[in-house]
Image (spheres, rainbow, N blue to C red):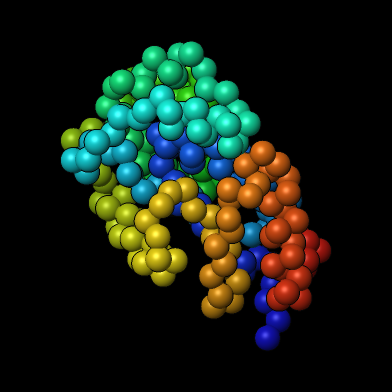
Length: 218
């Protein structure tokens, strides 16, 4: 059976406040730039949501590990926030809304949000924290997105989809990058490409070629 490239899907399971997700996002950017025909699903897991009642602080050692393995540097502004609990509730709501209502801007939004958090030290826990981001991308999310005491209905439903996908791949670890071709789900090991994001494009190309697909397929 012949599959068109437009039917291929890429899933990125992440949390906006997860430093490993921040390190993996450049891989998503590279794949999307190389294969804009592939349908991109940015699924926020809300792992760092305060509503999960789990520890949401990060240790300095973990940040150092990310820096070493991904060859990146976190800003001093971000480092000052490490002793604080982080809350990705509003970002999960906003990213889910964007994925559903403005998918063409969702990746730009994620990159802008991560820049604000990991470079500028913006906690992204209040509606005012998003004012500049929303204005920059000319977005108009509804008020329900910014209710910090609850995950939106859409976000809750999406998280159930995340759980279902994690059961299939038998890991709850984030981030996770998955390529779906026909009925096959392929886990892309992002750890191999953190220092060379462009190399993951070659890995995707190999998977596409196995299914007789290439970048010129319509």
